Image 1 (cartoon, rainbow, N blue to C red):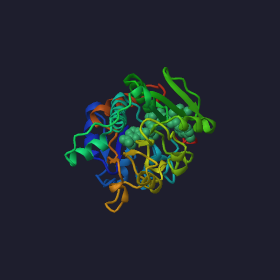
Image 2 (image 1 turned 90 degrees about the vertical axis):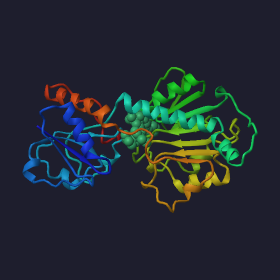
Image 3 (image 1 turned 120 degrees about the vertical axis):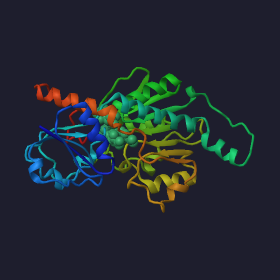
Image 4 (image 1 turned 135 degrees about the vertical axis):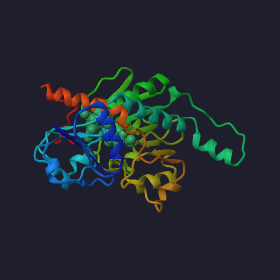
Length: 320
Ligand code: NDP
Ligand code: OXD
């Protein structure tokens, strides 16, 4: 029951090593760092599990006995976009390590804008000593698009810090202390009350391009920050970068933080690098750490082989 580590863009060797430590005695094959597999078809015949980030279609087509695809990300758009999805369950990462890292990022960026980080950085560069008006957290509403595993945790921590927290999801949700909205009908009232918008949405046909000029124009405009702020750590395909750039330059957005982009890496020519009050991070809001995540994947494989069901299986029709 061989495991194949099929990774494009991250370090396959780190994952192979971490999985070998978590599943001693198991044959573990892996791709080269460019995502290609150098071995023969015969090696691949016993592959039952693929552990993957951005798998190559040509490699998946060579696995006659594949039983489960494990995504190394919480997001599975990189798998569901394949031309021929193998007819096996797709399991995504849900893990306290990944969740805690994302909550750190969201809290970091919310506080950065709330505590006037971009303005103080400019003042420091100009050697200026001047205090700026600072609202209390309770006066600021943080709206989270996507109240799933990651959105839920970030909402709870932000609420404990004192922010008013709102959340939007596809289906109705109850989260203590969080004002929840759902579906198309819930979007307008959610946006109209939001000062800092955080997107933790998966990329699906319904969420593609949702963070655009129209949505920005529906955010609360008379809030304590002067204009709304946008933070996207979900997927770049959900944002219209030209609209965000224009909104930052016109003042329709007071600031933004983007960890994900329509095309990654963001090219050196992109105007976003110079957009005012924008923080750019290179898709690192929550990295998948091999040593933290490999034991959970190994446990799932052992449970599956002993007849227990798989957890965190994605619904391809829903898209996440
Ligand atoms: P979940 O599947 O647990 O949550 C997704 C949430 O989005 C759910 O609340 C879901 O609603 C909501 N949602 C989906 N589609 C819609 C829609 N059309 N309208 C309204 N709400 C919608 O995912 P996670 O929280 O684990 O992860 C979220 C995303 O974060 C991942 O898909 C990935 O893209 C991104 N991510 C980014 C990372 C980074 O480093 N930048 C790292 C990890 C993840 P409902 O609850 O009703 O199903
Ligand atoms: C993920 C990611 O989906 O790292 O986990 O983007």
